Length: 117
Image 1 (cartoon, one colour):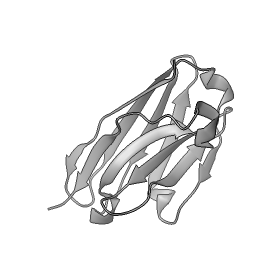
Image 2 (cartoon, rainbow, N blue to C red):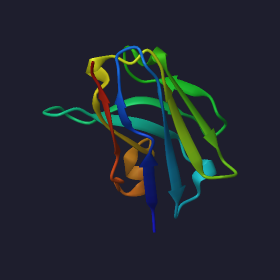
Image 3 (cartoon, rainbow, N blue to C red):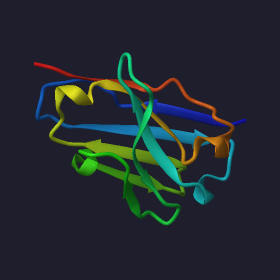
Image 4 (tube, one colour):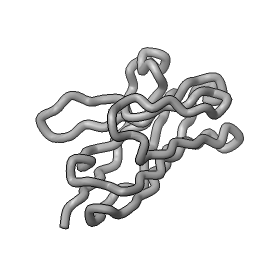
């Protein structure tokens, strides 16, 4: 069955960087557009950035130019490098297909990112 396991979150000061990882299994990873989503407290989950099966990046929200998405189709992994982090980047970050219906709207546990001084 589909599994998405996010890792790499944590606490970082404003201006810092984090690299998130997502291990995917249970589906044909190399055929899917994959994205990073986030959900801050009291808000709806939003798509931040996504990547095509061939590795081209699509920025999905304002400010996501500070983020770099990459994938390794051989390892079924997708990564998110986040630089110049701001307090309003604080959220739980999830990876998923784009659209999420491709994986039956399954969600992993996410990884918490907290940006504060």
